[in-house]
Length: 276
Image 1 (tube, rainbow, N blue to C red):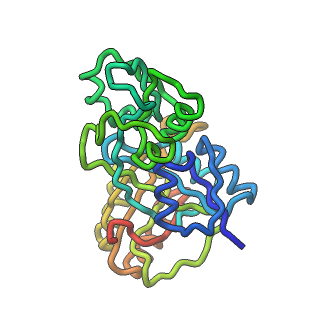
Image 2: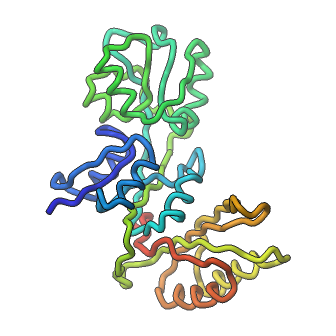
Image 3: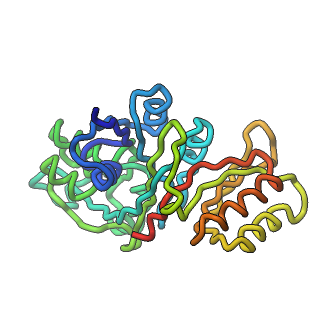
């Protein structure tokens, strides 16, 4: 039976590109226009796996996605760092001077902010998905509207590239994770990264103490993100990513952190995508 994979976006989107890296053409692709819809497809067992963007090297963390993974008890089983190249495209026969509006995902607009400072006549409009805008322009033959999307989207929807690689910083990566509803046994011999979530007492030095445990146990902290607890003002949850050489070092640190922290939770144990 084919695996059903949920992605945010459609063919030509960056999530679609990541799905092509992980899976062959035998998968069934479930195209969602929001991450909430994607998560629902996992929790109601419509899909086996989901692909979610978590952070970008220019725009930073996609904080709501951390909460979605945590609140719905999803498990991270893999990750992938995708080189993101944003391109401006529109219907054939048009130039940049003909474009009055550019529609795209808020993260894409943010990553291309400097480019559009040189084109003040263009209004930037937030939309749900990069490739979906490209498809809409093609399907409805909309003039004077541009999209920011991948070259793959331009090819699929037969749009003209008006400008290539328009992101502010040319080396632009987004970290994507593969998530599933149920926890699964991981191969400890290849696991060298973990995503964790915990809360701490509001005491001086509590965060420093748990960070010292990670350091003493030879864990490398690659990410720390705080998120406020909605129902408890001024109390925060911490989401951290750690890498390690020996699983035994991680196990030792984990056993200590479980004692020191409150609401300690493993969001996933998997292979570091930066090792590829």
